[in-house]
Amino acid sequence: MPFAYLRKQRESEARQSRRSGQPLPALSSSDSALRAIKIGLIAILVVPVLFNVPWLHSALGPGGLPDLWVRSVGVGDGGDVEPDCVNLIGDGAGAGFRFCEDIHRIPGVERDTVIISCDANRAGWNTVMGPLGNAKPRGQLWTFEYPTNATSQLEDRFPVPVKLIDFPEEQTFHPLGLSIFHQEGVVGGQLFVVNHREHRSSVELFHLYPAAREQGTGWVAQWQRSIVHPIATHTPNSIHALSESSFLVTNDHVFARRPGPLTEHMIPMLSQRFFNQPTSMLQGGEGRGGGGDGGGVKGWVVSKLARILSNRKAAAMLTQIETLLGLSLGWVTMVQFNPDQSVETDGVEAKIVASNIPFANGIAVSPDNKTLIVAATTYPGVFIYDIVRSKLGTSKGGGPTNWLELKLFTKLHLPFRVDNLAFTSHPLPRQHKHDRFSNHALLATGHPAPLQLISMARNPLNQTSSSWTIAITPYTCSLTNENISPFETGFQQAQPWEDQDAPLPAHHFVLSHDGAWSIRTLMQSNGAEVQDKRKNRTIKLASSASSFYHAYDDGGTLMVSGLYDGVLLCTNVGS
Image 1: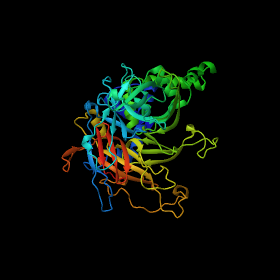
Image 2: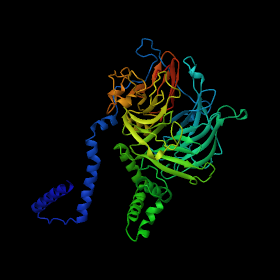
Image 3: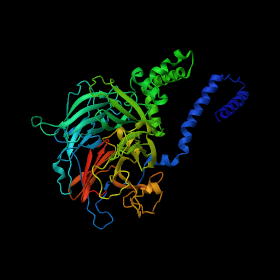
Image 4: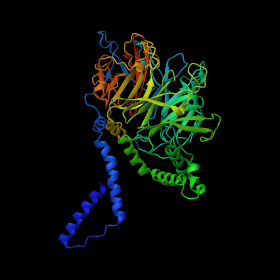
């Protein structure tokens, strides 16, 4: 196709030359090849988009989103109870409580408390979407004691900043995903935080515990060490703690807007990501092999590509292409490390356990540790994996987890670009023996209109972006014998659309529907401010990033963070 175009163009130039009497300039073979390559690259980029019109339509975002809608308790039963919502405002140093990402419950505490990662400087430093301006102003961690009943006074509760102890003064801090590993009988635990530092991303390890009386109220995070590895902290996003010395972390892009150092990071990352080989093997292949073996060629390719990707202008352009085209280049890494090491790269081992994920973002592991879910932002939806255990164990659940043999169970389309995932903090009232999620719901939160989000990222104080949070549960049909799983029989029972009471039902905007899963909207908004006349307050939530849900007898408490906004808190929320 490109060569046919070149031939026609050459013939046209020849006709024009004969008319004007000018000789036709010689076209070198290198010029022809270069033109053919350019046209071929354009075709590679454009053709997939043209053949994927539904995906392109979903990228533009839906119409019909309400100003703000939150699911009521008892919808459809004639006994609706309206949710009560408020925007959280930070107490004391409250100006830093904005542009929030992740929300997690702190285990083992008497008063139900969550920890929240926020970065008030996100508009000046964002390694995912840009810009890369001033990285010096730090982000913050916050805790919040949330209400667990419908009668609480919401205005009387304030988030409190977490005090960081021993964290290096010269180090930048831009928290994104976070996770806590908890041991029974211990209040708090090991806190893992993804940190998008100025020069190279890391995972920060803290010991999280309640502040002593002399330190005031709130919580303290005592820094232990930084963890850095080329395939673990290249473009880290979300994290899930497995133990005190291991975790899973997603990497959303191969093309990093803020690439790491060439020799220490980019070359090793590419070597392991694409060839699954240590850098030393690729670099030494040609010399040992006696001229031109596979290792030498691969090493040369990696070196050249790493130099290109280390150029920030080229990297920024390629990052946008990877995002807009939904290229399946993201991955999940399993990391094991020595907590006693002080040098950030020492004692760290990492292996890729899941790959080919378009914009690998949020991550969650089911309560029974049998299922891994990864947010594939530009799919858009989630990838669901079976966690494989070794057959060597004698326990009912088998032996240790074999993370290198994750099995993709299914892919599920969702009606927005998924950001973060989380399971409900407590089981839902329904019970079923074969529930893959152990009677919890998977919360998925994200961005229905990504172009709006891009605009808001450039001007967060004057722009807005829509929000959407859903609850996902395995559909369990009515079976005579509940010991038989619907997934095993393949039996599907006709069911009504469960989200039809939402202003914009989820099934109206998914690229495909899977009847094995129930999807119900908990919150959706176009980002506009809403006046609550009952409480005489104004509420809003733009650019939703993460959510948290605590179920109680007559409803639940819902919290939703805004990537370029604050946090919305609602009680009396249905599930």
